[in-house]
Image (cartoon, rainbow over all chains, first blue to last red; front, top):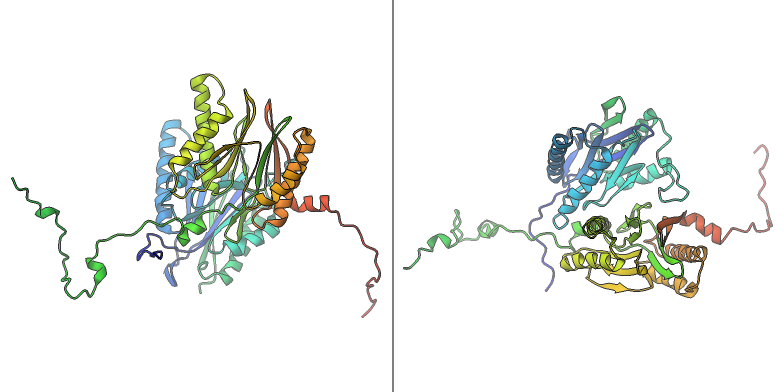
Length: 223
Length: 266
């Protein structure tokens, strides 16, 4: 019997790209603001970035309905954590929580490609990258989404840090300054916008450092 | 008494179904859950593209793995931790679905700790591998992809088990798992002796992983080598396989026959 393809799929891909870069004492998380379905644009002004905790921000591309559900779940779990422990959840803690949340739906996954950025317990920047079912890794930089195959090689070229698996260990955090990292992110998206139809319109950049959270926008090509 | 079962009969659709203009409206709403072989799932899962190996020798257990994760033809990461530290005296290797291996190894670590607390003694490698194998067997056929080796040192000495998502569990002294395993076996089997020192065994493991990454496209990154002894595990080395290549096969400068010289001016 030939495999029958279902007439309806519960998933859709709303496109978009997310990037995060970890610095010595800051973290930059960025995403474009276009939301599409097929060849149509649903909206030009949709934020894919969500603040989960004081020192923890998540950017997700993929199916935005699943992303929204995931964000709500994590926000609720964080609220419970705050009530029980009287403090905010740390970024590494939230990273593990996100991984487990994704894996609990192993057999009907969240179609959500996430990148978590923030400051760890020592104040150093940290970025965690995920696949759709929860496997995760702490890295120095990452990109996910439709433009990730365009952006990742460029980031590897500019920021390639020694693997954390090397022995003797070498530091993985980028030596760039905060302003240089923001500039690099803007460059990434400007290029990705040229060649990826789903990445466009506006770039939302969130910077986390010891002074708090700072958000800025940059216009991208709208075509 | 005849029960009134009219309520259980399927209701006729609001719109007339005579013409079958819209067959979808009258059909019962349903969708089949995305199957493991569906395109969405295929891109979501990591293939068993990897090389991991472990063997028992005189001094204990040597465990080694590469660090590449591929999604189809795209390398999603070159720095994946494929040797998972379950507890200070037990290691697990990762092959297959990264999320599956990460989650269930962490779950195994929790169960091992609970065993310690409940029984006031460490769990054996036999016991730990059985716990994992039973969990994976209960999910058999549901699409988990796990090919792991549990290596450790317990009261009976060094222990090594192979456990996979089909429900298999094998005790053995030499295993290699993943797409690069045939290449690793070639090097491992030809160089293996039970009486090796720790350095010799580590070098054998490192070479086997290097050769697998050389020939297998889905393996690469960093070759990590761990040793499990009576005092627990210790990471011995982590070397980039690109650099290992030139370490094993250094470039000998060849004699220059003709040299291009810069033309001044023009």
